[in-house]
Structure formats: structure tokens, C-alpha cells
Image (cartoon, rainbow, N blue to C red; front, side, top):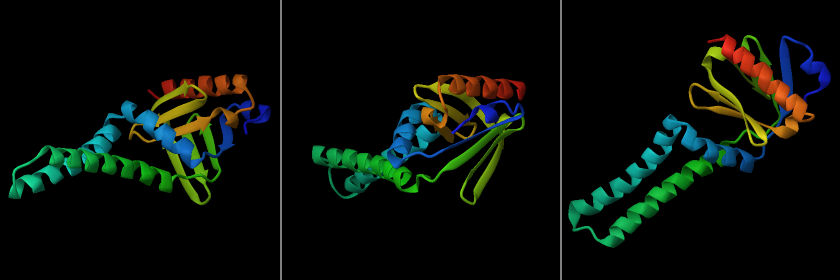
Length: 168
């Protein structure tokens, strides 16, 4: 949780939160259309599975409408497999995220990362969470419950937005 003391430290803001697997999958699906790279990987890979199925069938007999339906089913199964991977690889332990003028420091257990603002593409409020998009397409979703109220949520967005703009 964010408290008034951490908001007034001036040079950094630290929050702690955790997400459920279903929240992570939901955020992944909502962010997919906004990340051309990730959309290409997921949809393109799924389509390749379907096309390979058609190619294998066409190599030894004439294709039927059933073959096309099977290929679509396999492509859909491949897409669902990506969602399943996101679900099982979701990091649900408590995350500590510190933002400062230098960038973002984050850790979950012993896993740590530091991301400078220059590698952040966007920070914005989306519904009931803060979305921080990295230039790689990876994102941080910070739920509203990580903040003590709407004022702290708004202040977090203002401060991080200012630091992001200053890095440009």
C-alpha cells in the first residue's frame, strides 16, 4: 500500500501489491491489441499452427472443409495455449515497485529489475489500474487497491508522467 509518507519523500515512491492469475490473464488480453509486437507473436504463431495443419493435409490429399475447420481449431488451441502459459507463469507474489527520477526498480522475492525511464513507453491510468508499458511491450499493471485512494492514484500518475516526460 502507498502511504502519505512515501508520497512525500519527493525523490521516490514505493508501492507494494500482488495480482491474481486471472487479473494477469485479463490484463494480458486487454493489452494484446495495444502491443503490435506481442500481438504479432501470439496471433502469428497461432496462425502458423493452423497453416501447417493445412499444408500437411494438402501434401497427401485434397483439402476439405473439415480440414479448414480442424486448422482453425488448432490455431484457436495454440492461442489458448499462450493464455495458459501466461496463467501458469504469472507472478502472484507481492511485488515491490519503486519509482524515482532514475526509473523503476521492482522486485518479487529474489527477482529484481531496474528499468530506466528511457525504456518506458507509456504510463497511464486505465480504468481501475495504472498501466506502465515498457518499450519491449512488457507491462506493469498496478491495481487501484495498491493506493490508499483516488488522490494518491492521481498523484502517482502525475509524478511518474513528469519523470517519463523529463527522460525524453
